[in-house]
Amino acid sequence: MEVTLEEIERASVRIQGVAVRTPLLRTIVLDDRSPLWLKPENLQPMGAFKIRGAVNKIAALSQAERDAGIVTHSSGNHAQAVAYAARCHGAQAVIVMPDTAAAVKVESTRRLGAEIVFVPPSRREERCAELARDHGYTSVPPYDDRFVIAGQGTIGIEIADDLADVATVLVPVGGGGLISGVATAVKERSPSVRVIGVEPELAADAAQSVQRGRRVAWRPEQTGRTIADGLRTECVGHLPWQHIQRYVDDIVTVTEHQIRQAVRVLAGRGHLVAEPSGAVATAAYLACAESLPPQGHTVAVVSGGNIDPDRFRDILDGPD
Amino acid sequence: MEVTLEEIERASVRIQGVAVRTPLLRTIVLDDRSPLWLKPENLQPMGAFKIRGAVNKIAALSQAERDAGIVTHSSGNHAQAVAYAARCHGAQAVIVMPDTAAAVKVESTRRLGAEIVFVPPSRREERCAELARDHGYTSVPPYDDRFVIAGQGTIGIEIADDLADVATVLVPVGGGGLISGVATAVKERSPSVRVIGVEPELAADAAQSVQRGRRVAWRPEQTGRTIADGLRTECVGHLPWQHIQRYVDDIVTVTEHQIRQAVRVLAGRGHLVAEPSGAVATAAYLACAESLPPQGHTVAVVSGGNIDPDRFRDILDGPD
Image 1 (tube, each protein chain N blue to C red):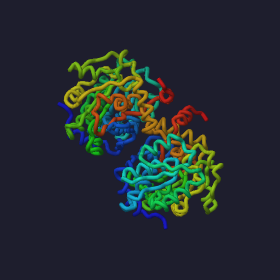
Image 2: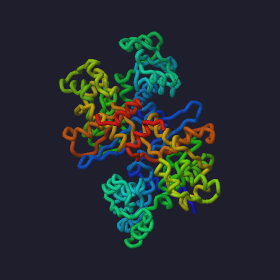
Image 3: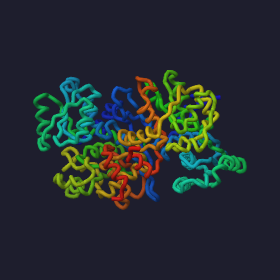
Image 4: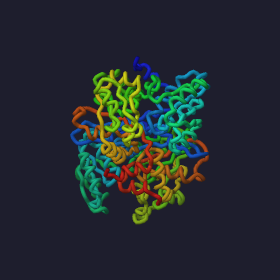
């Protein structure tokens, strides 16, 4: 069964004091277009929306469960969000990372007090499940979990509260946890709002899944081509897929050039540092005029800002 | 007489719906240091805190005054804030600009519906006063005005509301309107909080004024040397000077290198694009450990983000 609006409303209370209540920013206005509002989740602790789901999951555990510890597998934004949320709740976190993970990400996760367990990339999920079973840890999945989805959905509640006449919400799609929560909150509040997912055309498994009416997986060598490294997930999760079918109106794709252009616009006009994955929704607004509604207020979720400084400079230097 | 807390509280109501209620972001934590919270005013409409004072001034006018029109002189953030605030209130704005103003700033102010009047740089104040007298326009000064100061002070109310145990607030100082409002709000709420102004050492007129106990003016060829172009004001205003004497604990200075470094840190760790003037308070936190309190929560006001893209890339490319 899908996550309910009530579960998301409970999450809104649980995340207070850890996640930031981000404002809506009306920073980008194109001539003759509906205004664009940005939801800057790159300003969250650890630089991404992931903190919402992680802290909702951990805050909802019993004290005994928190005392037993938390485990997850990730080398990206999810790892740091779980480590941060665990620390806020006094829980020990164990993060399973591929032994190929970048040293800076390992170090920043360790600085948050998490224990790192290295494994070959292919063994991440298995090792995570073993640790949960052997030590009684609670696993915090990156997207296929109703507490995680409910946490991400708090973004949708805030959008509906802040902009009563929102017409369209654009949301990046990787594993699908973010759009699942946001779409549920927004549609249950106002069924007429359009919720549109955005993917890189080089990792368009969700768009293809919607076209075919069934979950389609792309191979890592396909999704690995996009600069939007947070959206290289090969397939949306089981629970997210239910939400996408029920609540999401459409999924559009953007090119690598459009993603880079959006990173530049977000810096220049929005004064925000966004990672490529975080910029795809803005890219869709900037580039896809014909596939988006011609009128009404549009919100783009800027999902994260964790971009390597060299890559950021390279994108700003454009053209590409 | 100084602006009162009550005037600032009234401003908080007036600016709602135009200025953004910016969150406090705990994004930068140095080892063994008190945490730093950022107040990201670069996310305001037109990219700077200036919108708060401008909209408070214009919203407080009578309908007849608004119908008569608004005038100001500026080529920077203040011009665009006044043009934006006037448009929000259906008032016509006339902006006196030096005929040396950058074309992009002229164009973006004009796009907001303002009329631009060009004059030689030395005639700006005089022409502004003439227009006010001849046409019945209301002048919106950049800092030497109690409604403008009260508007900027709403930042202090938000800081006090969001972080009850704040120990130190760091604020950029140019003409002094921003720190006047912030210091009044913070000190009237909690007299024990330290409010510290920050200036470039190349434009340290306010720091020198505080040392000498009287307003000291620096020459344009002196203040013009700093990269922080928003803080090149030659002297703090009359009304700000009263507030600084009464409410501000100290004014510290930062080097050009420290300012550039802070712009990099704000981008890398804070995910914010700050202009050099907007980064000086963060620079003081990063560089001036010995002159700042060793413990307690510190807030740095990131006052603006309007930086030329080429300059931003140049700073990111460092070292400098």
